[in-house]
Length: 177
Image 1 (cartoon, rainbow, N blue to C red):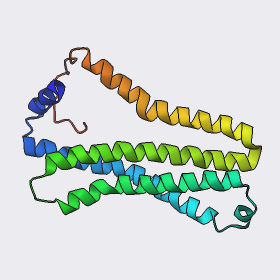
Image 2: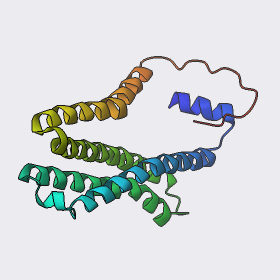
Image 3: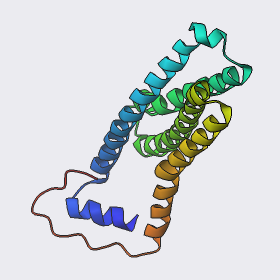
């Protein structure tokens, strides 16, 4: 929080401006994830209406169902912040909206990672067989866990243990944060 207040002071940003920026940044980030999860969801729905799906094994049907359920949950969680923002627009709830939206987004990303992992499992099982597919899916799960959660959490934890680095003087306003 100290780094954020220093950053805000450096920008001469009011609390209202900071909250507006936070909402805008969150909604922009969610647009990226929403597009991906919606394409995945559409793909998973279409698979069930193909001829090869009818001949698929029980294992493949279960994996597909799990992927669909997690993709559905991811769509709900990743689109919910926009709905919260719209429903509570101009109600003075922006700090709460940001807090809830952040939790929904993180949960949505976790569900998207599971849906993607099970989709990889489904597709690789059809191509290379169950054991190789499981190995590849475990690798995919580890990749998502590491890149999306473990590394940022590690950075977050390590960032709390050291003083904020001095920021170089800027000749103009910062464009990102």
